[in-house]
Length: 45
Image 1 (tube, rainbow, N blue to C red):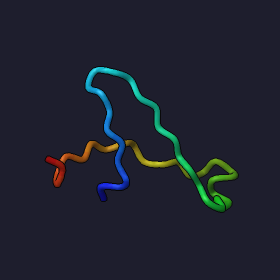
Image 2: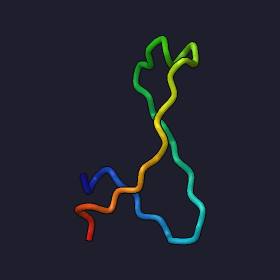
Image 3: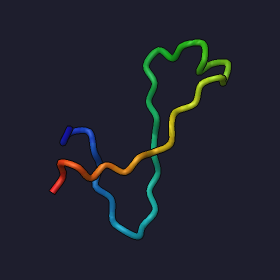
Image 4: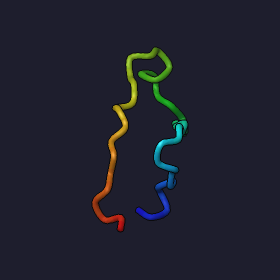
């Protein structure tokens, strides 16, 4: 998991990017959308 996170500076804005490999029809016809972001703190000290 450590390779899949990006540290941010508290109080400063940040942007997210969604990379899709070979998106399927629901993405193309806009019936699918990603879920909201969730803060994960467990396992990071």
